Amino acid sequence: MPHAAEPLGPPAVLDRIRSMAPFLPVLAANLQLRRTTNESAPTCTMRESPLTIRPMIHRRVRQLCALVWCCSSVAVAQRVAPGARVGHALVFDESIGAVVLVDGYLSGRARPAPGSQPEWTELWAWRGARWEMLADSGLRPRARGANSVVYDARRRTIVSYGGTTIGQDPRREVETWEWNGRSWRMIADSGLCSRNHQAAVYDAARSRTMMFGGECSPPTAGFYPGDTWLLDGSAWLRAASEGPIGRLAAMAYDAKREVVVLHGGVGAVPSGNGPQPVFTDTWTWNGAAWRRAAEHGPPPRAAHAMTWDGLSETVLLYGGVTRDGELGDMWQWDGLRWAQVPLPETNPGPRQGHAMIYDPLRKRVVQYGGSACSAGGSQCRFLDDTWEWDGATWTQMK
Image (cartoon, rainbow, N blue to C red; front, side, top):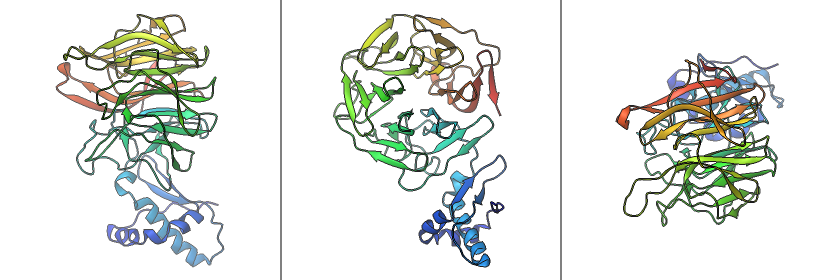
């Protein structure tokens, strides 16, 4: 039977125990220690130990390991929700049956105040009632935002590529990492520039992670490549160099028509410092080539969110930002045309930099976070709200 949860000890005791942490990871792993959180306070629990040791020793070791595990990152352990953020990603992880939130800027900035953001990548799971931080072990990627994250259903892993790391020395990354439900590992890259704000989805019909666009780092800073890449599990392979103009776009996989759908986005500032182009066109990718599917639809925008909706069997689009400010509208793509979805009085409201994904178990679209700015963008609020769409109404989850 599982042992009862034990509270954290006084700070002085925790400091002493934390100093012993380097000597306990193997023992803690053998004891199958597990961190959990609830709405009131973080606790530690442990499953039955496979070790055969005297009860008194077992009890003392169990207390030590629980304290080390919980207190190895006190600031993170005290949080019971992801917090306000932008530039994060949501995926549905079939292996655990939950929506998983990955990364993002908690303050909206890549160079935050010291100690205000996690140093390493975070994973949070949502099953409809509360957010729960997923424990991991070993090597992890540095915390980042504006990276592309997908769930690879064939290999049952979460794949994260690129983005801008968070800290006093932020930079665009070229690393590709994957999470197997227990730990992270880095995959070797080839042929890619360091980039952020690229769009990526899992192409289920062809069992490949597919990525498009983004913004590259020096020596090509400000360059928005219009390239398309596929991940075969160990390396990125260029799939196309023709198609949509290079941009920071939004994409989703259309499971009914088995194509990737791309909409809108923002392109590079043209030479001569003209206005930065914002697009409204729609493209589809069939695994071999791009096709322009529509010239018009939702108004031009960037930083919007798109996802497949299994209830309506359409691709949903929500929010984003234009030159005039943020948008709070919703649209659906049925494979032929866009149609605006009338919103009920209660809805998430205008926002950008949010994330959205369909939960096939609960048959809900889940949306989290983003930012909402005043007219002119002089003041912005970073959001920590969770919303669900059931096909007719939006509900803010508590």
